[in-house]
Length: 407
Ligand SMILES: O=C(O)CCC(=O)C(=O)O
Ligand SMILES: [Fe+2]
Image (tube, rainbow, N blue to C red; front, top):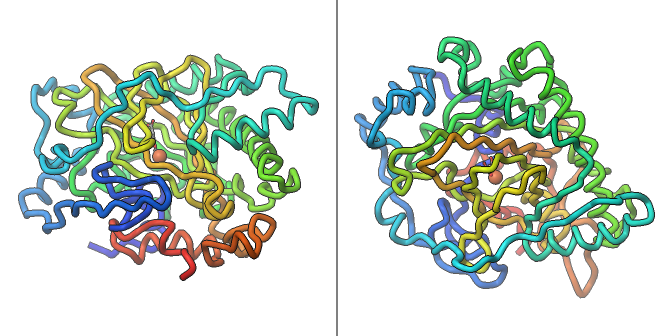
């Protein structure tokens, strides 16, 4: 087997990563996670034994079927294959689900114009500091575009397996459009109950050939990407103002010049308590804008409890990624989140990761305007290429903003 190219590896680590021990934000899969800065909890190590040959063969057979989890689910199983089973010790050490009716802030941007800009900037930035996640309603993107985006995602995944096979691959370097199940299938301790179609442009500076996008979702996806890029730029303006920066300052980081649109499909699962839809992680993007349907399952870790992000029709969910957390010198929070499996489904979700482009030549790190003698930089400077390359040269569980900390 030829070794994966570094770009390929960078891609695999793009959105989901396992933090290392003593990471201030936690460890993989949400066990023993301490996300609150300064309250480090030593995590319990996850099972690091090498996968058995049986497991590797099972993974290969699953991968080579090119039918994904959807293909398995269509056979009507009453149990899930062992490759998807989360180790019992990890399940038993999991954090509890927040019992109270706590939810992330919901920001209503109705009446957004130049007069209300500062008000929204403040509201948004407070949410990004305190929660790292918030939902936005009346953001300006038409409801029918959101609904269509969910619909065409479902249509793509629910086509005959043969129609999807031509898109099935793991080579993010050679292809901007990639369909597969579990981008980290061979590296993770257990697979997640999820398939994904993605368009990735962080290596191409936002460029891609529209003809590569499957026709069933092409027209809607192109419109959606266009709208989200504009909305992303606007949110960056608001966050800049909220942080006391010049309105254009965060935009100058070229956060939206390279992006990934991931169209996730989480089939109904016969044994949801035994697996996850998506392992616990923080996004390494600058920020992420997520569209989800009404099924639910996304949870964030807040004060050591999993808090549900309850779906709101027409809302978009925003979260801060590690790159912006670093740029803000930890003023903004990048927060652990995961997706639980459900016996109902399918669930559709579509995160749009604003990653910046690997080709950017500027240096990244805490913005000078946000540091001072009293508030010195926590992180060193790096290029985005280094930031992303780090994810390929480290073990999966040896990743996190800590690597870029000064000390
Ligand atoms: O499906 C979701 O709701 C979350 C997806 C996500 O967190 C990711 O792809 O990084
Ligand atoms: Fe995520």
